[in-house]
Image 1 (cartoon, rainbow, N blue to C red):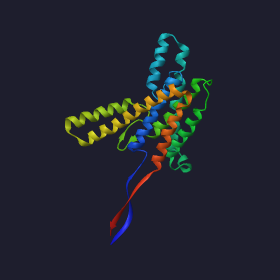
Image 2 (image 1 turned 45 degrees about the horizontal axis):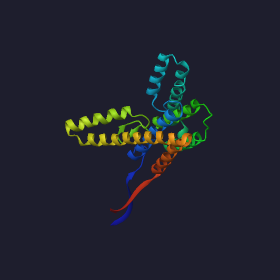
Image 3 (image 1 turned 60 degrees about the horizontal axis):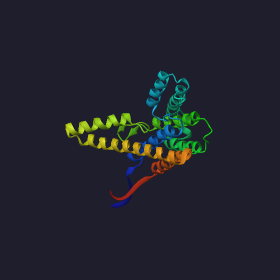
Length: 233
């Protein structure tokens, strides 16, 4: 007997390549947004902030050095909050907490775009760093490998490692991993270019470009591709 049934051949999840690429685009976007338009401080790249802090201290620019400390604190706090959301009873209130994270990002970044230039840059950078940290902590797996959606160093290392394995051992799976990481790296670069361009062009409201990407992420995340195929019993 032949019956019509629904088989889920593919479903977008928090670990999908398409979602990972969009979130990486947002990560690159936010870094250039805060660096170009909000005082030369990175939202995500805390390594860069630590280095710049050290440089300012060495140069004797103590006030400027202090500006790199709040985003470090906000980023650290974001990790605590994201881990708390994952591990505690908040799941009962928001069972699909990863979608809730994306909605939270959309709401906060929309509000950030309304903050006038007169407000100290530190306020904006702290908010963006906190939310970026929550995103990074919440989305850490790309199909079957770890990745980061807000910085590129680890992804680049993993990509080159996969390329090496693919070349030296003819490993097809390693080649596929390298291509996936490549997509993530390109998405981050595109996001950084867009973030810088829009910030220079339209100023503070450029952050709404990240909102648009996150809306697409949410739509993609909630999409389910179903195929109707005959089932034989």
